Amino acid sequence: MINGDARYRVYNRCGHSIGVYVNNGQQSLNIRPGSFAVLSVNDILYIESICNRKKFFSAKMLVPVDESGKDLRLEDLGGFSDESAEVHHSAKEIESNLKKPFNAFKSWISKIEDPVELHEIWEVGKKLDLPASKLKILNAKMPNRDLLEEEISEE
Image (cartoon, rainbow, N blue to C red; front, side):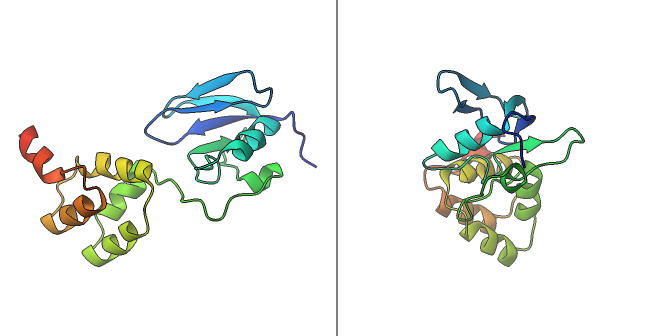
């Protein structure tokens, strides 16, 4: 049986800060990118239960880590993951998918609809020298962004 008072480091694996409320409902935390907060199992399960739109732990935006440095799933802590949650991709995963052949890239990007994920992809994509065919696909997914324009203005 999992002890609800057991504490784990919870890392923010996103490129932006994530604000959460802990179990007592009075304290809020802001976990910066690449940083961590020490939370109890009860806090982790509470945070996941109150997330309405994006389940931070199911999406792997926040990841609890044990003493040996191993990533833990909600199931490891006695909770349940939201199977429908769109999983957050790390910068390395995004970069490797952006470098894939066109059809594999197109298949991967077609499944992503979350604006936060698309922003992360845009941030990584603008640092790479992508062919025009991939830029067109990215621009179609993010009509408010124009990677071609930004690439020209940075030079």
